[in-house]
Length: 296
Length: 282
Image 1 (tube, each protein chain N blue to C red):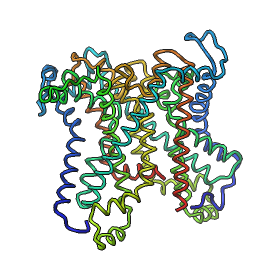
Image 2 (tube, helix red, strand yellow; image 1 turned 60 degrees about the vertical axis):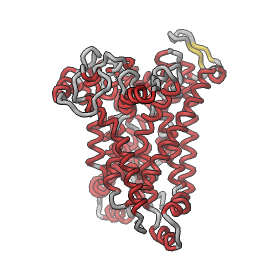
Image 3 (tube, rainbow over the protein chains, first blue to last red; image 1 turned 180 degrees about the vertical axis):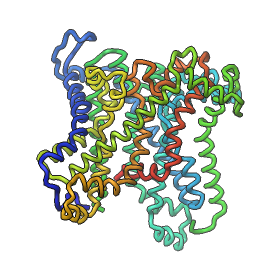
Image 4 (tube, rainbow over the protein chains, first blue to last red; image 1 turned 90 degrees about the vertical axis):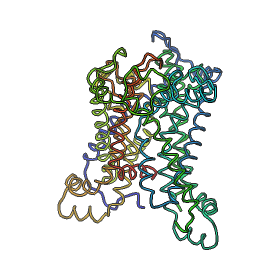
């Protein structure tokens, strides 16, 4: 596809007027704050903002020497891996079933996709009610039938399970839709040829559909990691507030906690800068991959 | 279906139905909770079948909020959420469509610089620039205002790219013909480009409405008065620590109300929703 128009409208001022609103917002609410975060990350400021010093990269050194920050990194990695893998796994299986059935697909599709509309924070409220330590239905079943003590406010492993379930629930819809679109774009002739050659549905899925879905899977992996890193703030805040004992404190939640509750402005700024680096890396990965796909 | 395999057919149906039951269960449970009295919702095991209190709960929540949790009426929060979601969706669409139009149909100095600046916003989600953005907004005296809720979220690289991509597929001859007939750039925008973009706008609207309605972190920071809470924030404020003294029937009624508008948008505009989501990949 062309990336340029053959001819352009001649106007000296109109294009500037048209981009002005987007640019103004970008400068005031994106560029300036991002610059501020970078600047503050190399300063040391006390909680009242009365005394400020330039300290080079001390804030970053302190962060990486802080076991709680490293623990938060590990928590984030675990959490996003679990969310991405379970969400994509379930999405793929459901999409494969739906694709195989063809006829009933639309009904199932409607029923599967709509949790995407539910806010992450609301999803967290729903699931933490089901898993509520004193009232929850699952808690009741686990206790009465299996004698298992469920209390996600006390046990860190259980808290992690809860936030993973609440975050994945919503994301299944998204993964499902993309996998279904991917499966449906596979040429019928390929599948039919394989069927004539005697390949059964499972073999066809493993040898044709699965490899052809790899670009979709890669795209979804990036999207799911981004989701788990940044958009799950609401889930964590509404379900566990990072607890118990910081076992569900993902990086984004820690930036917020340290900045707004702990008033550690320089530490929080340094964490923001690290997060920026992570987003930039993820975006670059995503766009390089898309460029490569266009060449096909 | 290429061959007839009743076994596999049955397996697929069974798996999908099980999955859907599990996926829908939290919503059913929420709905059931919103139809009982507060007393019933304190007895274990909790009910699995609806009671008859739905209407009372809805009215109580919309008018008075949840007693004891010191929150504004949920009706007010719903209005705030609606204003926020609509402003974000419409604002993003307008801002992005005109900047994409400028980038595609004009050649001007700094064009590439502007393009890259818009691109970089992709890499700066609110979550990454929380504190400094909050500072900017408070210095502009926009805490507890709709402008403060909406403006910092309203720039959109994704939407701009989507429109740019689409404009590039509009044949050049259309523009040349319009130009020969004496139509200026704005005339061409209104009479040709905008009507052609209708489906893209609809698809984006669905996605952006959901995005706006579901915002959490930003309204949490920027609203300090209860009358400015959005409904998603309001729910969280109703369950301090999640202890048993919470009126779960009312909290869950609020959750139902909070889910309803975006869920309706997805279900009623499913075609646009799917299109909007899938387009983002490109």
